[in-house]
Amino acid sequence: MSVINREFEVSSSLPADKLFKLCLDFDTLAPKIEPQAFKSIDLIKGDGGVGSIKRTTYGDAVPFTSAKYKIDAIDARNFSATYTVFEGDALMGLDSATHHFKLVPSADGGAVFHGLL
Image (cartoon, rainbow, N blue to C red; front, top):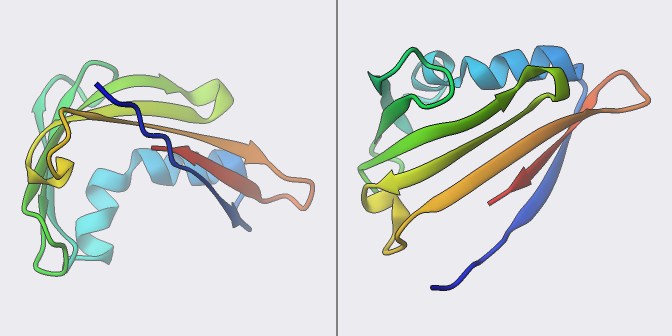
């Protein structure tokens, strides 16, 4: 078993609390904003919170068709979340992929999105 980590940061002018809410609404927003990339994101099991399982069906602009993932953690107080992709061709041969992100408020009133893949 191998572990591969990819870290990235993206600055935003939106405050961390507002950006975190948008991240939590990704399932609803993504298919509307980028239908060529996201056909649908459906809740398969749970209430949308920790332990829930979701399925993403990708659009024609993406080189794979689907992914299933489980929400491992949501920490609204610290603006962070973790989820694990465990099924689908989006894994590109991997057994699973865990994604973690955290939003850190910045001095200018915006936020920095820290992602770890």
